[in-house]
Image (cartoon, rainbow, N blue to C red; front, side):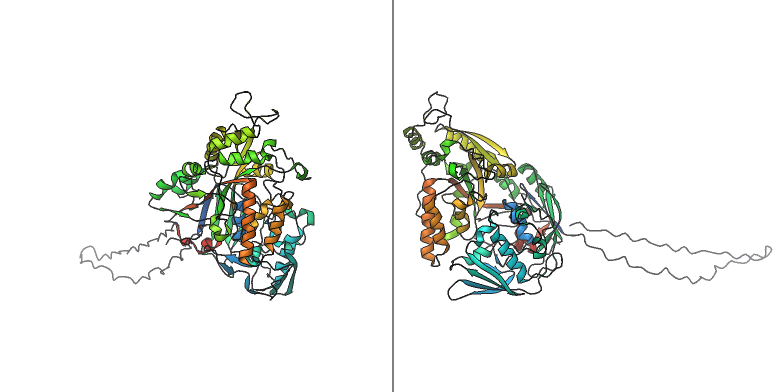
Length: 571
């Protein structure tokens, strides 16, 4: 933070010397006149210096795809939601739930009625009082809109939601569930007086540029795909920020991102290229943090069945070979996960296996056996299935000879290591006669091609998991093909029923057994290849701001509300 300099004006008093003269013929010694009494100028103090606003500048390679929590798909959007909205319950970086809008809660003996006692005196950013009626409206709003890709999912077991008074919310379930806290964790509280006027079929299209919430920050300026500026909500009931503003700035390349940090144009960057970590650690005023995450990379196959192509917006142009499980299993054998980790991540990751990352503890099925990297086996599988290279060009054809196994492979440009990973996979899969056309595109373009259009063959993308496994496992349910939550179009009635079963299993061990079985089915059917679970790497200017929160052995997320409410300028 720069300091102001004040300049004082010095006033010089000049003494006037007046000479007195006697008669000319009798000179007399002159005497200096008696000093005249003068009043010094009134002493003035400079006005107190007004401190410059503390503005934290965060650089990242992506941008929110929507400011509407009902429509957002990208992780950058959820970073902004977390800062501007609150939920009933929060989650700290050690994985523990804590009271947020709800001061306390209890559940009935039969496990079906949850009563939340809300804080009093909470206000929305526009000064309106927040009450239980707003929360009841919010949850019902998410529940009524099945087209919402993410948030509707959390309400599937909610039978009734009501505000019994201004500070009491009651949620009645159709049956007891074992993960209620995680189901309300991301149900962002909306102001009823804003959202109730939106037509039902327009809700997902609402731009929500003002983003009126109750969170520790509020939106003051937004330029799509460029920047978003948030001001501190100094009256926040729980975490009033110590800084005045935070600006998220999108940079076009990872080189520009790192350069901005080095030159002080960015105070924190969230997408640190692995190749720069060593040199950044040598910078005197830069701190690099590497920590845990619930994030994973996924290679996504377009496996939507012909009879499940969405009626609205569905293109379903996937290569027919991708729908053959043998092809997908062969490609899994042809994927050297450790090489991707070593080359693209410089070792900062662990081999992936399931949509449920290892960081979720015993929800991860530790008994799963991965597809061994075995090029010979992959070639044999494709040979036996009738995929031959009949013209000798190095690329196999369909068994009927109709088209070569050449796949469109889309990668969003905000994956820092995406292009490198695409090149590695291109070389690996070429060894088994499969060609890929790697295209690095804007994230919005990839989203539009993905879901529910299914206008692609293979995608490289990633997920950040909830603390509970149900949300990510839900992405493979048939019911989510139409609403855009499903990226793969995977449909399996056995898997669908297991998802229903786990959602009402209260006993931990019983629920875990179901979730383990779901992971086993998904691994065998290969709608995804999970090459790795990734570490989070962030870097910040330690000479500019301090107070970032990170937990040893926990998650690393320096841009979350707990950190950004605690960070303050270096004095």
